[in-house]
Length: 211
Image 1: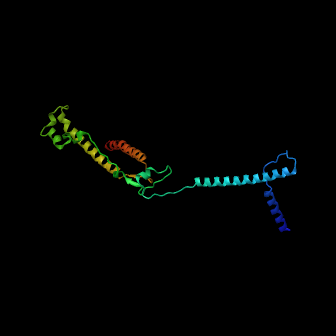
Image 2: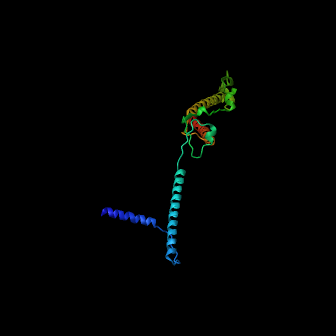
Image 3: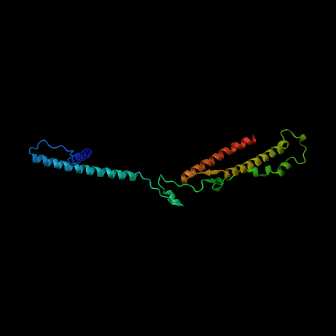
């Protein structure tokens, strides 16, 4: 009985798909032959419709899967032109993620010309009041405080030069870190910002030390 029931269901399902018709027949038909002809035509049209529908659906599925597929292309040691032509979602990791500033940045110092003049030399400072007794000089006489003033100036120049050398040496040892190769514009922008920050912070730190 169970086997007969299964066979019956399979036969019913087969007949359903064989006679499947999604198109409505016209009510103007009069003869049975016309009705049967239209019914068969509608059944064939239904089959064609579903065949085309599933073909289109299958094609769209293939297209969507193809479009969403990520294709990984690896280029070993790319040239500069290859890097510039990378797509927007391309990545170029660095073989070395860190590089000291001193390897690609050169900072030159320029001090006031008085720091390299004779006015801060020992010879000039000693000459101002050499062999003179400043006890009898007026308080407004340059020779009274001249030596101390130029000694202070010499000390300030010496300290500023020493601090500049120390700051640049420390700056050159700092590391520029990037896990991926940067475009020229981005790299230049970051370097300009780093140098500008160094130029702004150095005088402030020096003033704090000598205060």
